[in-house]
Image 1 (tube, rainbow, N blue to C red):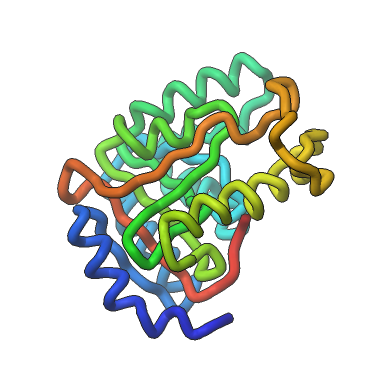
Image 2: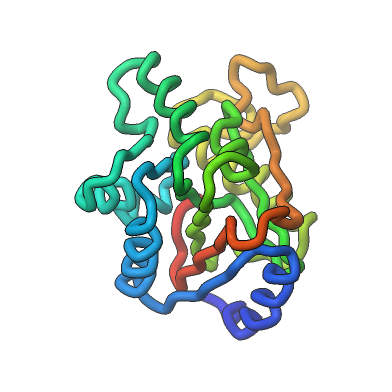
Length: 207
C-alpha cells in the first residue's frame, strides 16, 4: 500500500466537481455497511461482473436483504446470461467496480460485451463503483494504460481466453474471437447529480 490516500481530499474535490460523489473507507466493515445502507433504498440491484465485488460478496449481501438481483454470474445458461445483462441495465441501483481511476477525476473501464459500461453510463437510478487503492493512478492517460495493460491481460487469463495480451504479446493483431477489450469507457463526469458514487477502500482489490 502506498501513500496515495494522503491525496484523497484533493481527489474527492476533482470528482465532486464532475458530479461524482466519493467516499473513502478504512475497513471492509464500514464499506459493507455503507453499501447495505444504499441498497435499502432500492428493490432491483444490478451487479457488474467484478472480482472486487466477488471478494466482498456483494451479490450475496443483496440476496440476503431480499433484493431482486441481476448478476450474470448467477446464470445457468447463455440465455439467462443475456437476460440478466439486459435486466441490470434497468435496475434501480447498479453496483460494479472499475479498472482504474485517476487523481484528475477520471474513471476508466474495459469491457468485453459492453453491458457493464452501458449500465454505468446510463440507465440505473444509482450507480456505486467500488474500488481498491491499487487502481489509483495519476492521470487519464495512466488510467487507460492500466486498464489495457494490467486489467485486460489479467481478465483474459482469468477467463482462459487466449488473447495476445494474456501471453504478454502485442494486441495489434488481436482478432474478434479473442478480444476482451471491445469497449473502453472514459468517464470524465456525470450528467445527473447524485447518480454516481465512487467508494474507495484502503485495500488492493481486483484487477
